[in-house]
Length: 312
Ligand SMILES: [Zn+2]
Image (cartoon, rainbow, N blue to C red; front, top):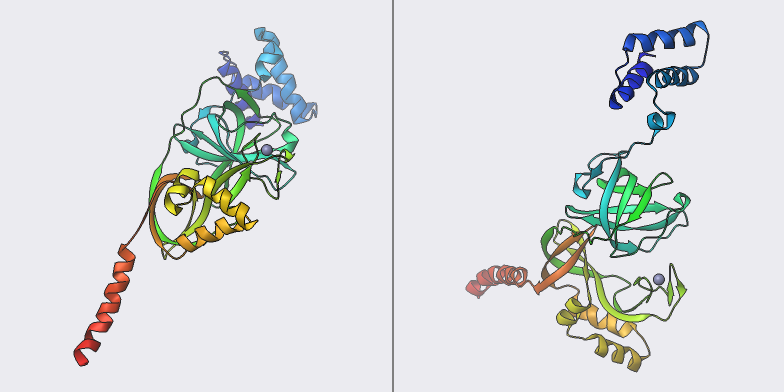
């Protein structure tokens, strides 16, 4: 009961009105213990009493309070209601009908994953556009934070273009796998998503636009790292332009020939990549072949070979 009283006193104090805690407690005590009024009703009753006394409209007291605006990188707590001002950096394919949209939001401080539930009934957001995401709730999954947009959330488009802070990382290791969805792909002309069997998850069957990309897995012997190469980086690294890739596919009547060519050039080789870390991917800006591990292999061979040579 004193908990109810404390909250009532605190809320009135926010509105600039001093009410005596003892007075609140006495009134609550009478209603709850003497008149057996349920606590929630007693609370409302007491609040109304002080509202009338101070001439405050009910709406002002019960007004939903705006959640505080935070930066993406400041989210380090589960279950907090916050407001974010950010840009939709990426939209991903959703694989469950309960999820309306999912992807990455970014602001000056970095990026954070978001999920917009279908039940929330909120408008669609667009990649590259900036919004005020009001009253979203944070959660943690496997050490990574994300925000959920629910029924009580609000999406307000803003005119400015929020700059997205990039955390550049470098990673070196061997490319151990090229994932499906790499090579010559088609994208939806509406939302830019990669098509799966000629269809966009959002817009259905569409006339796709060709693109070239690589989704690969690297391994440095300790942990694996997903990397993403866009068209420019892929063209420069593999030595096949988008136009050449299209010709190869047309000639072979099969898009897979491009993927095979990429695999044969990359898998099993060592590289040093650098780029922005986005969720589990590094969006690669630069990639160069790393010759050091090969040298080390040669040194190893030499050290084995040397004693043998001496013996011979
Ligand atoms: Zn689409």
